[in-house]
Length: 169
Image 1: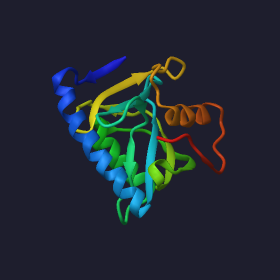
Image 2 (image 1 turned 60 degrees about the horizontal axis):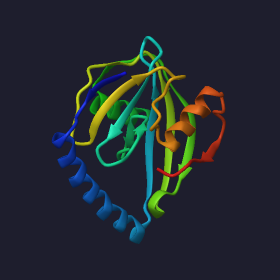
Image 3 (image 1 turned 60 degrees about the vertical axis):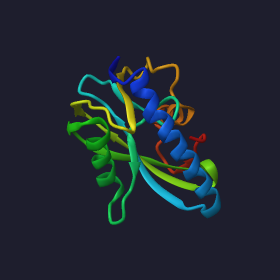
Image 4 (image 1 turned 90 degrees about the vertical axis):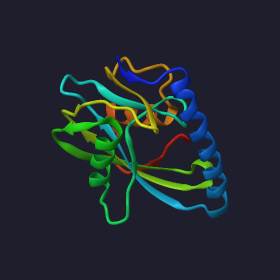
């Protein structure tokens, strides 16, 4: 069930601008190959639905999350990102599940994946987020990004030990 979505020309403008920005950013990454650190959340609503987002600069549904700022730990960064991206107003237990690493666009990326339970949101859109949805874990959208599918299946099957490579974002 889609909770809120930007469509038509209201979605096209930010998408075009951010796609151009992303192309420039990828070119810069190819030259500098930075290491990034981030957090993603498998966020479950009180009724057991998985919260996913659609970015205006990428195709498909993703787990919410983002970069870890200097001086932040991974969980603090994730909770900040959840407040900013999906309008989280409260949550229950949060625990680290596993880490993933991948090299999209020639950069080194490391992400911590957390399970956050009983997430309550007041959904709102931003320049970055064009849709927020809450889906039953066994009825996820068809355009779920492969990296997100990997993370969700790893959680559902209980494979939470160690760090592993993940499909490219």
